[in-house]
Image (cartoon, rainbow, N blue to C red; front, side, top):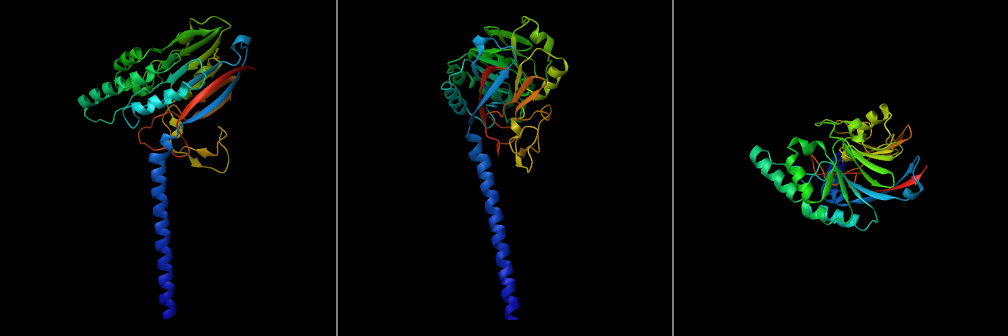
Length: 300
């Protein structure tokens, strides 16, 4: 009888220890995903071998940030810190690939005011940039009305491109299409003014638009996107995925399932999907830290 009671107590103790360990692990994971990784912005360096790159463009460096979502769980102070890091990177310009502000306010009138307040808060950090800024729009920018975003981006000296392009230097052009989800993307219009033989870079908020670029055999050397946040929470896998990572995202937004993260190559073109700075709809990141990307063009 005594042995049975001892065994039961031992089993109960093991169960309680196991449950305690499980709860502690869950709490630690929650704390890390909420208060740790979202603040650990990485700088990722990517080299882009580029066909027909003029000699004078070899070594050209530029940066990308995406999905700021200021006003939800991301602050102006955090954006300023990111811009100050960009200023230290020896790049020639910075791309901003959409989703600038997001509000958690449910009331419609309060949401509009909150959105305007968040958009205004973009100005001071972006003005601190020491390089030219070029932007594309994202779905969140259109969902609440783009006018207020446009107003404050102008005040921040950001050049917003929608189905249009701009000449950068030495035969290098930067284009952007309108948001895929809620806008009217027009690749032909975006590339219309670019002369033959130019090296073309394209911003498109949703990465899966790259399939359209490939299908149209568009003269685009590389597309730069965001939107997915890399999935924010990525679980470990035994085998690498198409992106070469040993993680996968169980939840991805529409138009980001084909190219959710990182660098891919298709038919002589590059697609890069930035993990973003902010978070939405939940403020968690696991195995998917926020990112500033630095690209270097090199001849193929």
